[in-house]
Length: 443
Image (cartoon, rainbow, N blue to C red; front, side, top):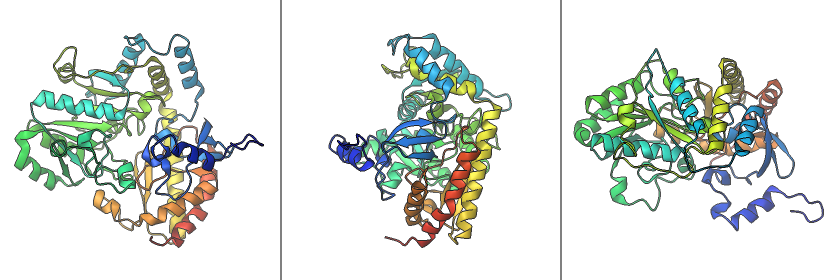
């Protein structure tokens, strides 16, 4: 902080942070390493905008990586948290709010009359949710192996970092140090959207596979939609071999629609367990696992599969999640969808005008830009894009007051608070960013 003006800068804050935390961050992508600039240190947010330590305001397309679906500091969510805090920050005991949120989650997740969730376990993070779902699948089947898809990110538990997307892709890490080889060997990695490869894996190891885990609509290697009927096909394949399907909706759950991707997939299918995060906590640390009673009641205290957490179902997080879901009605989704479509279309138009090879892939109101002429369908084709074009594109948008995800491997998040003024600012910034991408060179 400047001792005369009392105002700090992002550079000063980052230098200070690097002296206190590894890399100066508590989550790797925040370091802005792949976009070649100094991370912004935010001090406040409201609606579609965030403000950094220098007092500069940005239209935000990160949205806390998804939870700020109503906009930052939505009055109803803030009031719900304040009211909950006035009664205590946590009790380490059960509260009525936990039950109410679990009931809301179960009621929202429906498609054509099917309701796959009868019981819900609340946890604190998406990593914890997927980790618990895998333990539960192993406990239910008595098998050890898990199948995942290359480029899908399911949190940072040991067995799931092989060929993960998002931050791991940004850092060009194939996995992670510190994961014992015998644990990594319990995960079988298959190319996404490749049913033949999956069938081969099940033909060879089907009797040992406990579950397939899949992002409902992948958003951690950029947006790569599932092929038509893919989720239904992998559910059928898993069930034919006595395995379970774990549907990871940590990103898509309650964002792309009232019932998440499960509710809008064009081909109905039957997941066994569904994990949630981000939106379900309204911006506070909260996630969930849901499924049928017969499976979920294998969790302790009723069953032999142990899971526990001191902060699970924290009353402030529960209040934020409940208020968020209560205000995510049809009108809110319509606003989000319309704003996302306008921004995605404008991005595609600007890049086309600048002569930049690209595709804008969408899954509901989630979308991302990939710098390639052919739409990627799996992790290998995602990685083959001209990713070097994204850093100058990102910096040009930032210079014009638009905060994008600091990685080409991330989705863009639009909120119900992105009004005409916010969308117009984004649209106006895109042509200069597209020209910067056009002028980029490798290396």
